[in-house]
Image 1 (cartoon, helix red, strand yellow):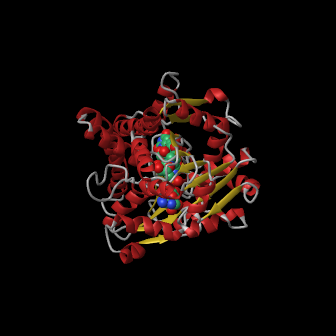
Image 2 (cartoon, rainbow, N blue to C red; image 1 turned 90 degrees about the vertical axis):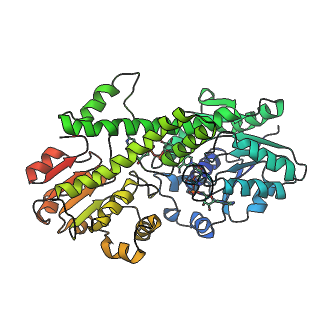
Image 3 (cartoon, rainbow, N blue to C red; image 1 turned 180 degrees about the horizontal axis):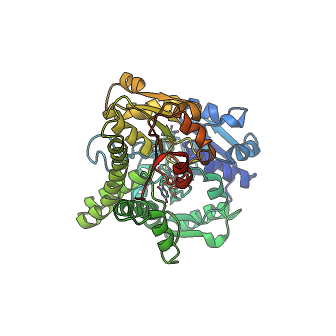
Length: 465
Ligand SMILES: NC(=O)c1ccc[n+]([C@@H]2O[C@H](COP(=O)([O-])OP(=O)(O)OC[C@H]3O[C@@H](n4cnc5c(N)ncnc54)[C@H](O)[C@@H]3O)[C@@H](O)[C@H]2O)c1
Ligand SMILES: O=c1ccn([C@@H]2O[C@H](COP(=O)(O)OP(=O)(O)O[C@H]3O[C@H](CO)[C@@H](O)[C@H](O)[C@H]3O)[C@@H](O)[C@H]2O)c(=O)[nH]1
């Protein structure tokens, strides 16, 4: 296999954009073109002011500024980029199906299939096609089938190269990944294709961190990694409820077990529930795959992770209602945070959406402040649930751009995202401007409880009595 000099990536989203920017940064001699059908998104990636790129990730603007126009390009001309590239990454979205068989569980692979068909139609020279999207195990078989049966007699090699970056730390994760995983065919041609991709990553990743496997192990490892991570969060969240009944403190329990080197300290932070575009989608997909092989116990085991997460979000909303004397009707509840975690403007599956929806059902007046999430996004998230007409959401929920204004005259504050800036607010000033008794419901164990109590707040923290 000759050295790769031209890469194309289909999908300029949270994964395609940052991963390709870093490849371009680290490999200035490789031309990297990221394409997308979404014109507005491509226009934003091309905005001369890198502060306006469509994804907020610490440090990403600098990476883009370094490579864009040199060897990094963003375009809507998908055909041209496919035609020119020797290696094509597919990094399109693979959401949970919302229709037909597998609705609500299986991954919707229509965008993947469209990409495969487009590559088959356009390609005139041999290509290495890399699955970057998270896919059900054995998807490469379908991609291969489409390429080989509808293509122009071009030779294809399919690789699986799942992405493990977490949002908010994408650039750091890409610069210094725990591992890079590459799966491919065990044939000589398959091994040569793997080597071509290994040669790209080892420009900046130590060779012993680049793992190579067969295709199916690679595809399944991505779903497994997310299932294990989410399982840890649900496990500690399940115990947070027990802590609240027994006087144990979940953060002390997490520290106590996390120091056991076999358990480890990460992903043991109890919260209002995990969010993000991946965990729920990927576990549902895993559950669906297990069921489709008739593995009922396996499916039920992993489904429990989602059931526990839904319970955690609901119980947080219930706690607010119960504490506010069993009614939040017409009370102002201030939400600090809407993003699914700090340092991102992504809100997909954020716990805040579901907590808000439950409280709106109780006729609460919700006021939201998030340092990075746009007002339209917040309304879109709620409207997407289809619980009530869009007008009602607009009437009941107000978005603020000032943290002190959002808390003014509120009956309660709920912390939904662990943004660092929340810790540094003038909490005395906030307290002075709230209705009394002034409640704080800390869904992220972010704030200093003793300090808040000293000021006069009534404080509830997840996993503490
Ligand atoms: N978001 C993450 O942190 C993360 C991390 C690891 C893996 N993943 C996986 O990576 C994949 C992409 O996720 P994302 O968050 O980047 O999604 P995204 O929705 O942000 O981006 C996907 C992009 O693909 C584009 N697209 C869809 N079909 C297309 C087509 N036929 N031609 C051209 N463009 C097309 C869409 O317009 C969109 O801009 C998913 O499978 C996801 O599970 C995501
Ligand atoms: O101890 C913890 C750790 C995380 N979370 C929550 O879990 C969710 C997911 O967080 P995180 O995993 O940090 O962010 P993602 O960007 O969703 O990244 C996950 O999903 C990606 C998409 O597949 C993978 O690439 C990453 O490896 C995997 O960490 C967020 O709501 C967090 O607040 C907790 O509640 N407690």
